[in-house]
Amino acid sequence: MIQRIQTIWLLLSSLVLLGLFIFPFVGYIDLVGLGKNIYVTGVYSSANNVTTKESSFLLMSIATVVLALIPIFIIFQFKNRKLQLTLILVQVILICLFAVWMFVSANNILGLINQSIGASNIGIGFFLLPVSILCLAFAIRGIRNDNKLIKSADRLR
Image (tube, rainbow, N blue to C red; front, side, top):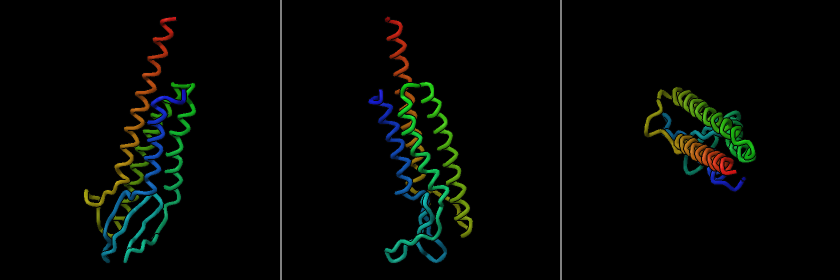
């Protein structure tokens, strides 16, 4: 039953999490006036339309890849719907912890220049995490509908 709607939601959740490599989660202007963006791969500054990498976050990059691969793993657990539901709930918790990690690391970087995260600094990357959780919630709904359908078919037998 790999061709169910929850497969699409889980794939979409995985793609959204991989979008963290494309979109910054914080953008700010430092004391010199250079525009800087914080991605999961590191801190990038741009001057004269040239982007340079100032520091890298290897552990955060690896965690992002692992978080993006978990929904794909969940897809292939289609024979055990109870395990799928459990893994999705674990994934939601991991995404929430990852969001806290992103927030703390951004605060540490911005704290060095006496600035804090405000509405003007937040990038698209912070909004990708709730979108991923929403996709996982829709996948849970699809799995529960499958459970209801199978239980009703068992009653008819």
